[in-house]
Length: 429
Image 1 (tube, one colour):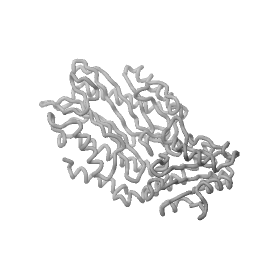
Image 2 (cartoon, helix red, strand yellow; image 1 turned 135 degrees about the vertical axis):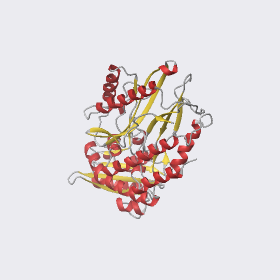
Image 3 (cartoon, rainbow, N blue to C red; image 1 turned 30 degrees about the vertical axis):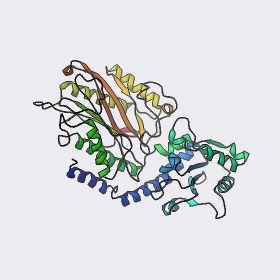
Image 4 (cartoon, rainbow, N blue to C red; image 1 turned 180 degrees about the horizontal axis):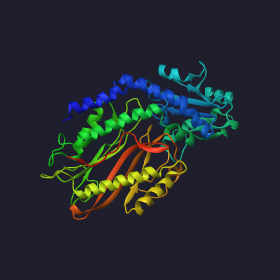
């Protein structure tokens, strides 16, 4: 059973940060969006060289980026919803326009530019002619799903409302979309610290004798306990969560739906997201279930965990703004191998999406060059999930190969810092 004291502690942290109750989280999400529109968007449009950005979606088939631009009281597209952003270089500001149904809160951020007797597409055509943009970005991309949101039918409708002159000015909004999504404001970073801490609390609560009975508790039981706990603190999970284990004589390094026994190495992968706030966490922590008479995990496991931490340090110090994701990957992995580690690196941006916008540092199934996302350069004020593993032979398990799957949430701003610390040692259960 979930311990009320732990739940109360988590909820208290969320309440103090303004993330609970739901009404306060909604108000906070509005402030986050307002700040992003005022600070992140102008910079993103300027650096990407885009004059006009058109984002459009249909009800039940909307552009993924819309959820990062809509307010809490209208979380989804209605019929056809269109947002238009015009960057005025002279004053370095963005004119924010809404075309189609909008809410009260949306009205505080966006100007409703559609005339009473005007169709949506006539309005789009008029806006384009009025501002005469040299470049018109639409969300099409071969590399990122969240930058590829325009549907075929909406694209056709857009073409029909534009003259040939403006059709020729259409371009991919990929670079602009990524720049909009990957930046983290100071307010968001403070909120991320609380969310990461609460995610860590959930792991600590579930990886305990209060909730694990060796020979009885199944890894699946812990997965549902995590889901239930996330729900009870008013949040949601964006994947899994997943719990698996390794054991002496085991046939896999990721045994799932398995009964937990004494002497097992437990691993979890968990991430939470708010109801109204588009911020995601992503952590992988490890625990050892002590055998009767044991007071600590086997020495070999502790040493392998330390090697995993060393690889985290190597990757963290390899981050550089002059490097692409692929270059950071190569630099870090080569350094780790020089030190005798057996590493794998598959880190990804984090924030407004779980598998977020920005440079990819390797993939689990591709420990080499990653085209597209791996070629992007690192940017400051961005968050990453530092996801990796090291492997080694464990003497206490007859030299069986064991993996340390690890993941921590980090922030890049000149140097790398852990958003709310990292796991310092194996949890002993």
